Image (tube, rainbow, N blue to C red):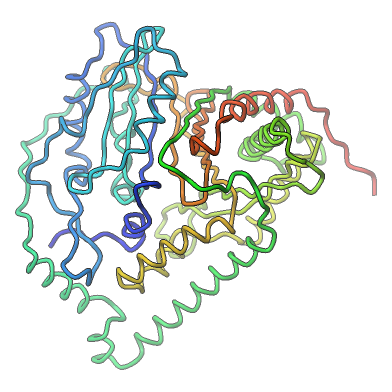
Amino acid sequence: MPERLSSLDASFLALEDAVTPMHVGSVMVFNAPAGGFDYAAMVGLIEQRLAFVPRYRRRVRTVPGGIANPVWVDDEHFDVSYHVRRSALPRPGTDAQLEELVARIMPRPLDRHRPLWEVYLVEGLEHHRFAILTKTHHALVDGNDTVDLGHVILDSAQDAQLARTTKWRPRHEPTGTELLVGAIADAVRGPGQILETIRGGISDLRAAADKVSTVASEVFSTVMRASRAAPESPLNAKVGRARRYVMIGTDLEDYRKIRARLTKGAFADEVNVNDVVLATITGAFRSWLLTRGMPVHGSTRIRAMVPVRVHEQPGSEGRDELAAYFVDLPVGEPRAAMRLHQIAFAMRQQMEGGHAMGADTISGLGGFAPPTMHAMGARLAGAFARRLYNVAITNVPGPQRPLYAAGATMVSTYPVMPLSPGQALSIGLTSYDGGVYYGLYADRDAFPDLDVLGHGIVDALHELLDAPRLRRRAT
């Protein structure tokens, strides 16, 4: 039988609409190799790598009547040239022109009747560079069996050879009747379902109720903690169809210098590089609000939702998991060093207190809901997110060595994180080969000054580099 979408993956499809498409992206910038890099080279590279990620040749098929989650089926008419596209900037293309192109391409929804991904080769960048822009739906990438295509096409060696692959032949696409029979069979085999409950007594029902109660309690606890002090912010605005995008590149060594200099003595081991990143963004928000003429006082806060990787939790089968932390960024604090230590203290409190909502918790709750109810819950969650946090900040550490695509050296990589309803800005960043690269993605009307926020990141980093060390008072 075809692979069925998990409840969490199905929720990304349910949450999506024409205004807030739920796909993630990346902008990878390369130096062209001596032999050149063209569209044919990229098509050949992607065709070869698709053998390692078979889901990229599959499309979503709904079950008649919506009685079960959709399934992945092979696209019998798969056409790689539809998904791998070509674009160009007028030579010599600037980074600002690339940002504008990304802002125009990314909001376009993916075709639900085809595999949910696209890749663009963007030629014409100045200094003999080109870019590869990826678009991959959240439902397609689960982080375990399937990863983003941008990672699959990269190699650690410049002269990596393409492996030989056998010719792909799509499997027969099931009929509507077969999908119905498969859904019923899955329901019969699934724990806690009606038939098994009747056969095995009420033990499964009690276990399911206990799990729902535990999950609901954790969700409610997290929501209550976050919602008590959710600040008003211009970051929460009505989201339209148009976007802006800004790329900011910084030096990883600067963050390490700040951590080493501002955490000596009594503050040793209290601050990590992620805290320095959050303090940098906090300083950028502070200057951005001031340039808008908005009041900034000592208690001014911006709440950030920060996914953090948590190592080997019980029941995770040895895999790391992501947990969501809600952190109030102290934009009202005028001293850069104090902002850093306040953020580090808040993050440490949550980590030590276990105040994080794991991704398995959210998916566990959704797993007990039928598709229709799940779709309603996903939309409700999207609306409620405005009360939970103001902005999502995703920081993904990358390899500190060069990566290559068909011999071309990747020099930088910038994430593109989707917007949710009422969330007018998302911030993604990746550290790679000695750099820290920010991708700021925002609603076009809500953020006419997105470049000001981008420049503020650079200024805030320099402010931290020059900040005097804090000294603890003797007790």
